[in-house]
Length: 108
Image (cartoon, rainbow, N blue to C red; front, side, top):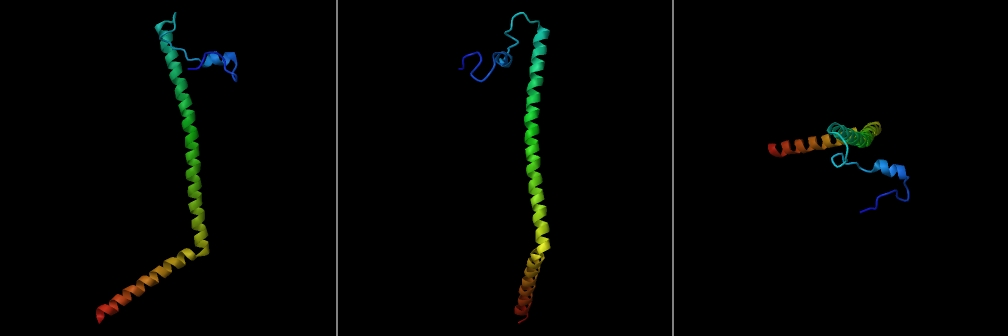
């Protein structure tokens, strides 16, 4: 593994703080102190997880918002061009023509 001690980019004090302390192996600690250290560690881990989740949620919300805005924008654009309604009207006319042809061929 990696040798203990400060690396090229970190200060000596930072490495000591970042080093993981195992409450069970630390001598001279009462059970209450060990429990408290475990609680503090759990709280820190949960805070880090919440920060990561918050960032992910913000990205997800922005993505969904962008897609929604895009759909709205495209819809307004299509309606303003009125190609949207024209295409529907053409399809309806074609369907009516097919239906009337079927009626004519059924009548003969």
